[in-house]
Amino acid sequence: MTQQRRVALFVTCIVDQIYPNIGFSTAELLEAQGVQVHVPKGLTCCGQMAFNAGFRDDAYAVAGRTLEVLRNQGDVVLPSGSCGAMIRHLYHELFQGTPHEAAADELISRTYELTEYLVDVLGVTDVGARFNGRVTWHDACHGYRFLGLKQQGRALLAKVHGAEVVPLPGCDQCCGFGGLFAVKQAALSEAMLASKLENIAKTEADLLVVGDASCMTQMQGGLNRTTTRTKARHIAELLANKL
Image 1 (cartoon, rainbow, N blue to C red):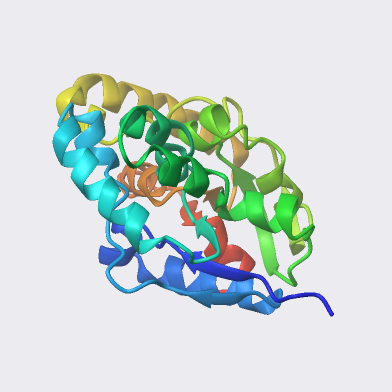
Image 2: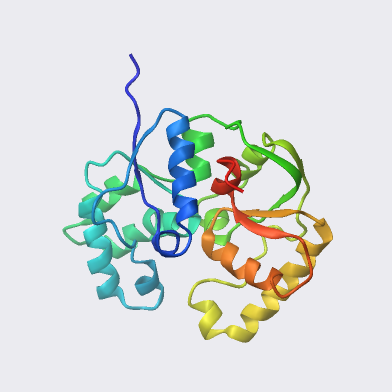
């Protein structure tokens, strides 16, 4: 008898505080595949914001607590390539040479972004999603460049019944968010967003589908200032038929 997979859902800060529907959609998607999903009590932040801002001691403290909370919790799945990249690529740097190094490496080995987990671990592309309209896909930077997520999201979109999937010009170009970058380099961020919006308009899509809520926020903010019908939505919501 095959043992049921157990997943600790790391909902991420922005999902927890602003977009809970993404978290619920992620849980439903995984449970529909026979996965036992739980959210460990006390799980908060991966420490990325402090790390990127240069506050390594604060990042070490926050991430160290995350290591303890996620100990012996099964596979860890995040609906975010950004937070996933923090754990998978930067925890090794943050904890190297410290008493937490072994625990960090162990956590890294069982941490996955949502589309990666569905496609590469569970072997699933058709989750029973339906959408009558045109959709396009944006490659979020951290997932694309740090985690190598290129085909997973596309494979899932290709199996959305009723959807017409169209390519996004410049799909791998940054939307200009980048966390603190959008605050510290506002002019550059706005210029990058403007370029992204031009490319989105060319698709005439009903949905701009993304794998990170932060990119979704940036691009939806820009779309709100136009007359387009295109809406930016997280892939978890689309796949769980929550739109």
